Length: 393
Length: 129
Image: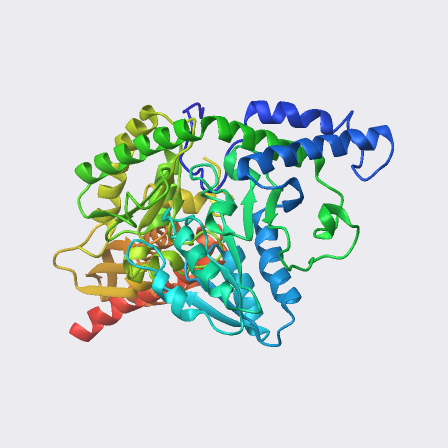
């Protein structure tokens, strides 16, 4: 009955596990099931596999293996970074600088700490969704202990000036006793941009395997040697005593394999998705009037196109596309438990009524031009239908 | 398609809404909600007389909003069409939601909009009399 080919354009939400990654993972569920903390051979098989994955990630990030902490995903990595730094800093009223467009895993963690007496500055962004670096410089205070700026935004793809931020922090740290720690959430950027932490003066970097064809439930945190951070859950002394809990061996193996595949294909993947993104934007703009790009094409990730359709609401576009077998997501968080329009679009200065009509298309390695053909076959009619239905003319 | 958020009836009305459009010489218009919240509903009614009873002879809607807003618009027009003014005033948000097989809790306000819209349209008609 429902034999239409599904078209997946929501890679910023998650990606399918690559077959090669899955193959590598499978033995670690059954025959090689050992606890990597065990001394016997069966356990040692586990730790060897984890070490291999750690080496692959360390090679990708150009860092030491001892600087990698495996976690359950980016939400945990972000929580560990922010709460861990605050806990370890020893100040009564520490200050965090972050941005208005962070993922909720950073934003809500900061807001939680704010309610508990921590001082937080939320940097503004411009119309393209990019942080004002001068404001960062001006926001640094005596009690600033952490700066957390995402590498690239998950809704509009805007790439943040991480290099400049790193330089500002480095300069400020030269004359400070309490050094500012620099954290970046690189979840969306890792597979497209050069994210080696050292070139950016980054101390903490979060990432998550399922955004780059690895499994869900596993991520990592790069922790630069010497960074003052306290662990968030008590228990065993795994992960250099920074993250207690038995290691998710199959997941970590999957992360390691997925990151090696990315390393091999990074440039190709960048060009491939950029071509698709540009083609979609061109075709949507020429076929549908009163349509705008949220953010800029140049200063954003190659795979995300966040498009705003005037006078209609995003969820109704999303569901109509879903009827046609096309998976996208809304800029409006309508379906995800809040009716508020996207905090990212609002921070970019887009009015609430306009923000509601936004759709995020995010491409991946398996998409083709044919997928865009299919979108263009149905999207213009959906927009016409919904605009006809709208009381706003 | 699979959707655990909305009932089959909501999806049906969203996909193929009833009484969509406007009435040029409407006797009453009710407009509720606002685009800032992402939901805006406009109902047009045409009132006629059967004996000495006034009834809603025609009703149309225009809505900007999510699937729930569109489905509740469609449902409230179905419920009101052919009803006397008194009967139409008795339509509640619960009726609309119930007829749609329920709404997700976060979308219940859409059924409020539907009730408010039909009341506003009748109000508008009565104030012009």
